[in-house]
Image 1 (cartoon, helix red, strand yellow):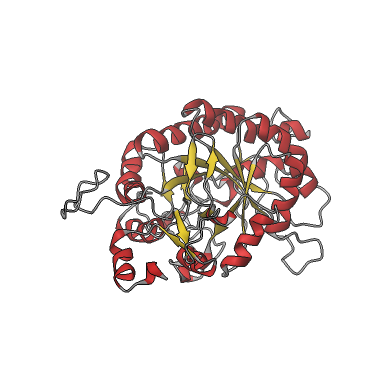
Image 2 (spheres, one colour; image 1 turned 90 degrees about the horizontal axis):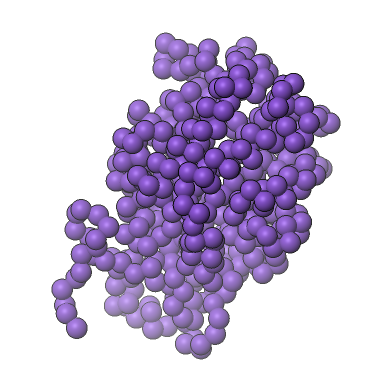
Length: 407
């Protein structure tokens, strides 16, 4: 056996060739048996993930010119080297007018795609992790201030780099009472945005090297502005009936699918319930009605969420509020196994996290804010369940040296 470390062929700088980080190895007790569900591999179209833990997309508002930089290298590098089965990179604008803030990531130019590859994707692939990007257009929620200074939901004026006079939406219906009213998209503008989703998906896969893409149709982004009657007052083919209001999302899915390889999975981040008393609001029953169309149009994974679409929404303490796990469970029950469901769980205990999958509530457990506190949460889950995982060599050796891998 050679003592010389082999260089990774994924990046131009020197770092050792890595194992498939996050892959199940064996139980602590040495007994040969199937791994816990949480750490079993999963096939998603032409992609296989080594375990069923994913990182939720979480905006970091750390970009200039909508490009990825060294902050993203450190942030996503820490996550992707810690062993999740997949990572979903934060919403990246498909159009400069569709960015939620001036500090969003973007992926509508080759230059931007190259920065994603250099600062995000390559490092994930060094560790043999599957990574995808969320394609976003914020519609009437564009041009907001990055909330890092606590300014949540405040539109950025033109003189400070915003574009509140140019934001676009299905109808001229404001998101809140700020006085900012979006312009109603024309049919031609609508079709152009749909085409742009495809262009961005192609850049993400072919130039940045992402393994999958996620269409952001949650938290009040443009696709769900189209499908709810509270934001869509149109009378043309993109408004009115259920079929017309959901047309934008379904045409976007078709455009993305036609722009990338058939082996590349498509995720959809879906606002399953608007969380409002308004009878015209989008309800869970509407999501279940939409479900067969999502299957028919080739969606592989639904990433569930709710709210964010209406400033009059009720919160988690309302009797009608559905937690993400309940939304995921209902979608799974109605999908007949034809689509995978990803959801957050909120647990910091491996046994409880594993029980979410064993109960049939979801197929993929997504971790968001917990990751920001504990980047080693996947390893912790493995310890909780009494199993060893493949780890990055720079981390694993010291534990091996101390006998950790022999317990």
